[in-house]
Image (cartoon, rainbow, N blue to C red):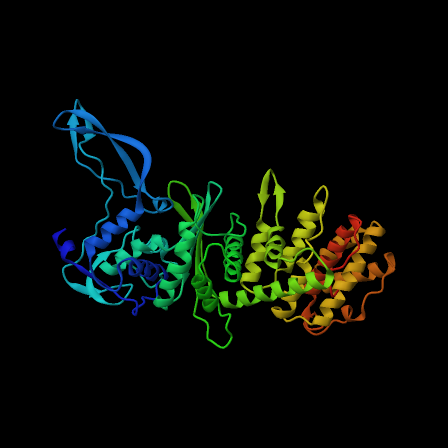
Length: 502
């Protein structure tokens, strides 16, 4: 302990470790203590004060001088830190009438022993006295057997310096989290290797959200669910909305977010990643997913395009959704269904995964329409604007031909409306279930005869690699079935309106 009192920790923002958790904790310490040398024990005591709280319950200890029992207020690690730090409070005990009793209120503390000689730290690479990393220093990556997936090169436990150990503990103060129900919980850590930017992000954005947070979480989500990607999408949509207008963030915070996300095309955006850890909460945390998202700038650009698209549509069509962000949230929020008295959001999760990874979301949208929405008691079509933003996605991200998309939308609308009039929903399911190009063309042939519709020629021309106009036939089939089923459901409600530009 004497050595700990004398040990100095040098906090500096110009030497990032490259480790998202340690650097996050480092900027938390920099924000509170400032740059320079600080006493190790002072830092540790401050962290303990931030991470331990009163529980509202009472305990008893035995006063050894009077043999009277006295009450004390129980404390524990703050939630959700308590899912990771399991170090109990300690106090001296004595035997009294055959039983053991505390003779003072238990104290919650975290200690670590530093080696006598300087060695190379596994995290920052600097030479200093080291300690064995423990779970409370780094909740996600410590024991080689358990976390070797993330640190495959480390065949032993991590050995880290005092600064990294304290930064690891401070990392708990730099995350955002959201609990969903009693079991699921998500943790979000934004990271850039530029510690000056990271400290500003913590001060102007993350800390603000933490202070305004609720018991269920500090992460502001437009919508939530048990799955990782839908939670990430909900967080990013809400975060992006704060740039334009915010009741939480200061003007400096909004400007910082805009700058980091690259609203100024003349400047190179700051590298930014979002680390997300998702799992089950109980007596301890059971990690199930760990993922990094590094295309935040591109996704923000797509978000802005979607908003502009919805704004333009609202004006040209005299529609009600004059608030494009709120409409965008509704569009993604709709992908859920009731299953055995529960709200199943697996479709939203799959669609969120696809767009966050810039992959194909259409098989999941098709699945939602045919397996969930069409089978409801009073089936609803997709919210107006849904097909418009996903057509834009197909054009900009999947690089589909715009004319082909218009053809699919127009023919799909006519197909769904005609199928409803002829009571031929089976044709739409046959289209959806086509397993190969031959089956797809047979269904189109049936459409011509049974509904007396003319199939556009470009949909009947197969190219090398089973592509139609440069697009795999499966995607053509999927998009056509989406447009058709959505039109069928609109007709079922007495509507016959297409989305704009179709």
